[in-house]
Length: 312
Image 1 (tube, one colour):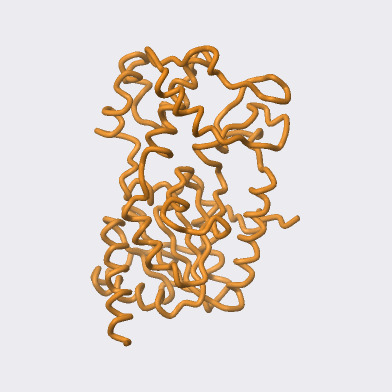
Image 2 (tube, rainbow, N blue to C red):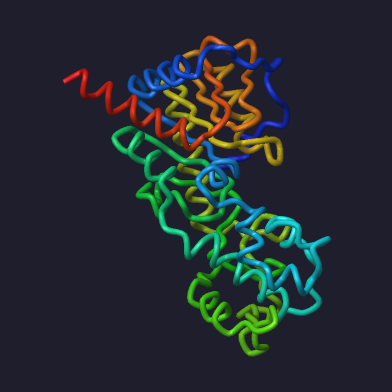
């Protein structure tokens, strides 16, 4: 079985620099690389979904989770991420929150424009997606399931809390039922899911401890990611990094930098609102575009369409 962990990296490559080239020049350069690329490896982090509109704080959090903020207190319910770590006193309370969280971030949102525009950019290319996001936006937007490796799980699935067996379960219908039945932030006791093997508690299929289940499909996706990386070493192409910060940089950000340094036929396009700096040693083969990612992807899409039309 292929071990994708050989592609993890715990340290950045060299010193970082911010590029001072005008935005238009950066977009044009990045667009040209995409047009010329045979292969494109997309690495997407939380910043991509935030730029797409799936923000975890502010007005969206208060509008969707007002009842939870009132019940548990604003000191603990500061945003959706922090709220997920709240020590809910009962299973009814835990699933009252997580069913709502899953509905507003996984099941109710349609395919968002940022992801649909991204798909238009790469759909004719030999592409693969590595993502730490768990909101299913890539699948909704047309990306082929066989070309996606979601390393950290999926908001739509649950697993045994202690990982007693290597299976995950689709909870979409269950979460919808919970969301409709919830009262005072609690679901009915009869809706609390139980592990079908050990009878214990279930939990979200999110990587947060040593019990995260890596099932057969997960390992198959890991193998396809590994094979794609090997292919890129020979063919070259573009590493397109979207919204990857320093929360889990060993999965995407640092490995992309390592691949860039070790393979001279690769280029890196890094889109990041605040942390678009790039490795200094690879500046000639890297573009770091800061600010509004949704605008940058729209502009890249526009440049690609314009370049194709001009080439006709």
